[in-house]
Structures are given as C-alpha cells and as structure tokens.
Length: 361
Image (cartoon, rainbow, N blue to C red; front, side, top):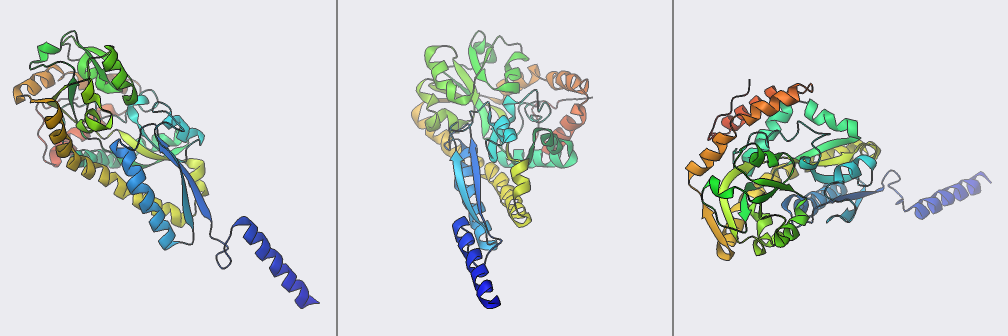
C-alpha cells in the first residue's frame, strides 16, 4: 500500500510539473520571461545592440551555464514606452529592462549627464565610455541614485560623436543667428549659453523629421548615424557640419528592482557580465560606425568640415558655463564641481586635449 501511495504521489508531482512546464530532473529550472525595450527603434545604435548583442548573449550564456531558459518580450520603437517615458516604465515595472536617455530626466537625474556639461569633449565613443566608467567608480552615488526609482543600472551607453545637421549651409558661428536648432535636454545649453542667437528647439528624436520638414526647426545637434538612413533626416536637412561637440555617454540600460530580486543569483551574475560587455560594445560599435556613417553622408548630402578655429570659437563662448551650472547643482547639494573635475581629468588620462580647458572651482 505504501509503495502504491508513493507511486501515486510521484505521478502527481510529475503531472503538476508537466502542467507548469517544469522539466523533470530540473525542478529548480524555470523559463525567465524578460520584457525589454526602449522608446527608440533598433535602428538607433544602442537599441539595436540591445536586440542584437545583449539579448542573444544573455540568452546564450544563461542557457549554457544554468538550467534556466530565457524568453524576451520586446518593446522597441515606443511599442511599450515612449522615449520620454522609458525611465518611468522601468520604475513601474512595465519594462523589466529598458534603455533610455538621461536627457529626458534632468529633474530626477540632474548629475548624470555630466559629460554634456563639458561640451567639445572627445569624439571617440570608446574613450567616452571609459571616461564615464571612471567617474561612476569614483562617485558611487551616481549608480545609487537609481535605487530611489526602483531600478538598478546594468550598463552605461555611449553615443556617436555629435555634430550639427541643418537645412542651410553655414561656415561661421555667426551664420547660425536666428536659426531654430533642435537638441535634447542639457545640450540645448550649448546653444543658449553661447549667446550666438540660435533659437533652441526640443523634441524626442522620432519627432525631428516632421519638425524640420514643416519649418518648426531648421536643424539639430545629432550624431551621423541618426542624420543618415536611420531617421532619414538628410532628406529634410541637406547639410551636415563636423563641429565636433563630443561623444556623450548619457544613456543607460537599467533593470527594475522587483524583477531583479526575482532572478536566481547565478542569472544575476551572468546578466551583469553580459551588460558589462554590452557597455563596451556601445563604444566600439559607435566608433566603427562613425566613419561608415560619415562616408554615407558625404555621398548623399553636403558635408562640411569646419576648421578648428570655429570649434575653438564656440568652445570659448561656453568656457564659463560649466562653472555656472556646477554652482547651481552645488546649491542643490550635488557634488558637481568634483564630478566635473573628475571628468576633465579622466578625459586627459585617456589622451584627450580639450580645445578650451574648462576651470571649475
């Protein structure tokens, strides 16, 4: 009787396991479903790398090293959260993992766009990611700040070097007076604080084409991959000028804390390792892509390479802004001066020479 009862009990366990989709012999294994996405489409480099690098590498590593499997529910191109809402989507758990720009979170993350506060930095995305990584290590409060919003940073994300695309030609800084130029968040200050008469306009990148087409804007500060075939801005802005504002690491790949806590420790460790490689890839991929994208633009629209004197003139007009903005942030209790100086020094350690060496005291 005991043997029969045991057989029935085992049969019941197997039946329940089968119903729940748990494989016999791996009772602790489970399918991990991850809702992942961004407001941007995969044609934008960082979102594309989420889909083509982070996702497959994570799935491969987890399924090779553990008994767990990974299933992704993708939410790119704003299908789950729009570009302005992704940070909140991660916070609320609408997304388990999301990629987003600090540019839309200035009030919640006032210190995280520190490279934007030092314009005309390195145009090398690999250096940019290394600089940001160095600063984050020196100031743990930058990562800790995300805990307030129920999320944890997995990776920093570097962008390609920023230049200026327009629907009109220009050669001197004074030529931009009276023109409406798009930007995002703090980089609007590259125009405002230079006092050269530019009219700053803001919008998420998906809205740029229509704004330039309808005359609500006449150009924008953007890296070449987006100005070319990705968003087809070259169709409404036939001029692209290499002013060299810098490559900025001001996006992040974050994970919702509730979801993170639900993951087995071995999966957490693998996700951190894959995210670290993804972070490096954002720099490597953007660096390789910059030359390719610039070549494409040169074949399809008018590209002008400004002399260093024009870049120096614009940088000189902005030389006092980092100090002024740091003072504002310090008044709010943030260590802005220390972070900006650490950024200046980290850039010099990787071999970069500033056109104007900002002084922040």
